[in-house]
Image (cartoon, rainbow, N blue to C red; front, side, top):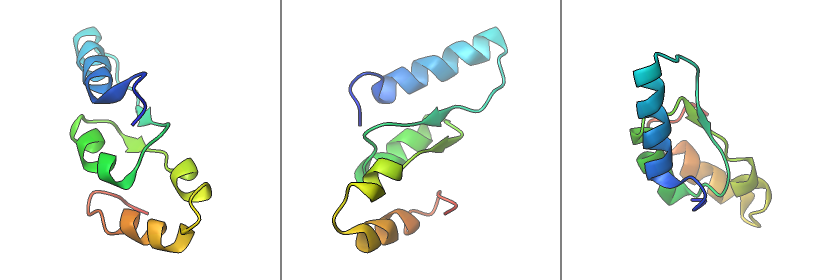
Length: 75
């Protein structure tokens, strides 16, 4: 997970959006790995982008299957 925003960053963004009554979908993007997904989705983001996690992985098929196994994802 990119240290630029991180889990706490997504939480802070979503908390501030609630305070400001801003209702737009937030998509987490950048450096997301299979082991990050559940923590990121728990923040309340609308979705995640995993194109780099798939594209730059030499084991595309097995990595895709790992993402599909995560119950919260609709792939």
